[in-house]
Amino acid sequence: MKNKAIKKLKPKELSYLLICLLTIANCQFLVSQTPINLKAAIDTALKNNLTVKNEKLKSDYQKKIIKTSASIPQTDIIGEYGQLNSYYNDNRFGVSQSFNFPTVYIKQKQLLSEEWKTSIINVTLKEAETKKYVRQTFYTYLYLKEKEKLLLKNDSIYANFLEKTNLRFTKGESNILEKTTAESQRGTISIQLKQLQQDLEITQLQFSLLLNTSTLFIPTETNFKLDIQVNSDNSLIAQHPSLKIMEQQKKLAVISRKVERTKLLPDFNIGYYNMTMQGSGADNKIYTSSSRFQSMQVGLGIPLFFGAQKAKINASKINQSISENSYVLEKNSLENQYQSVLSQYQTDLAAVNYFETTGLKNAQLILETANKQFMNGEINYLDWVMLTNQAINIQSNYLDAIKNLNESIIQINYLTTK
Image (spheres, one colour):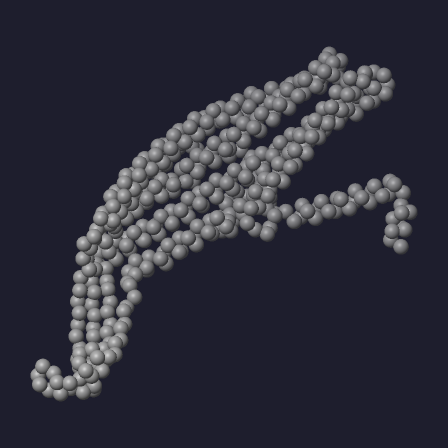
């Protein structure tokens, strides 16, 4: 019955019904979206991001593993039965335990403790990287939305132009070239809008992946442009987590070498034994199976063949030099990155200032003048299209300049761990 009722609807009624259904579906989609500001987005990502969570688990693992520094070999328990001392069958029980030299356990604990500290700094590094990625994705989304507004504005301008051109063409006041030009301009804008929508969807997916929540969050900020005071002091680089990790690697290399050297120290071994000794003893007394004798044993394990261990010590010395060089390389790299991005920031800031003081005013003047002269017949449609596109390009370049400025600021924040 429902299908028959739909079939009876007129084409215009069907179109109206379809538009209503699409409008309702779109409204439901918009309702499901939740706006979120940058600070809340960063807090959510730090709480839910799987990369950060995984790094925290690794840190917990390293903390637990510190207790393994005093790993003692298994206790040996022995038992014997037979003619151990004489014709009679005796039994013998013993317990022995070996230990490393105490210094070994001390150095191993130091090594594991430093590895745990390194894992904590790794968490800090992942958090800093996550903040950077959230900021980049957040402001990329805002940039694309601003681009969308500009394209829609441009589309509206050419829609009015096309409407007037069609009317003029119908009256014979314009030629086919003017009409074709207007249609081509709108077609180009339509393609750009479709590509922009695809970019927005990809950015939205990246944003959701970073936040790792079931809620569909949409970046929302009153100001598309980041505005911070940039400090040109590169001493802040010393606080960057990646450099701190390299500093930890230097400490680990030193302690690792000390651990290898302690393994040249002797091992300890102690034991306790209890046995029977039936028959006549050295004191001329007769002992039965109920009589028991005991003894203690203390031993040292001396490394006579230490060539392999010496090689490990020499190798650890080379590793120490590598870690020191790696620290210097990382420090130089971060400082160079900072100086480079600081220079880029100054260039981007100058570009944005130009557009805000001069470029945008010129674009608005070009649009107003072109429209006025075209309406008065002072310029033809080709001149109008050229001038309009020039003004729109200025506005588009302004958005690009802000995007570049934001990226420079985000990178500076990352390098200075803000």
